Image (tube, rainbow, N blue to C red; front, side, top):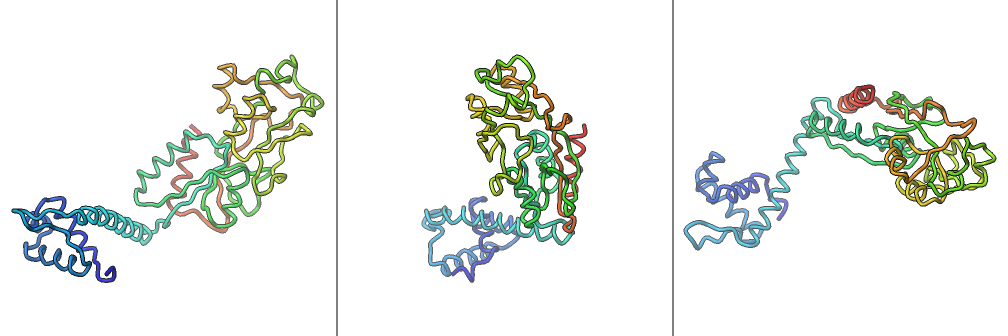
Length: 298
């Protein structure tokens, strides 16, 4: 009979389990023992189960009682979160913060900022997803994300408010056994053209994010990790974020090279924090944005 179940009954049940007796539960809840006994008896009668074995000196949870106590804990915790979110929203905080991240965004400052966000707003539900190239902007425009940490290429769209966070240096690299590794000089476009270029692509519109293409043969990847696997296996060349390849280069697993008249900006690609101009960030979103800007500028 779920319609007659109350949070108070569940609270009584959990308190008895935690304190070890009806009388101790009554003292903790500020009630007489008879009221505690009546609450349990009503719960057992309405639900049609036996929660306590009353045959001994002290009532003991039955097997069913032990299972239902754990379920009661979950319900009470969920109710607590419900109340906390409602109170925070009433005070002006957004009911949730949904963040979409492009694959090139460095992980460490993001983790630190999200940990700080959790400490500052412990009751705020936060949803986080890593998107393929172009996915964060799509999530912003669809309204399914409030804040995007992303590339905006070739330029910031008019409907987006964007805040530059940092530049990511992009370095052309190949595996040591690749033919471009033994070139002995900066590569020309004609050097690159016959070799497979491993391209990070938008999974929805693969040709929509074609920037910095130099080869006629292209293998397209949605995630950065799989592209790195194929790169290190010698299947082609690509430009990789400098912070991700420093270790493999030092270990001799990858080899950097230069490209004459490389179309990729010398200063690298700009990572932005972005939201739609017609959907302002709430207090927590603004706080996270400032945290990211402070951490990355430092």
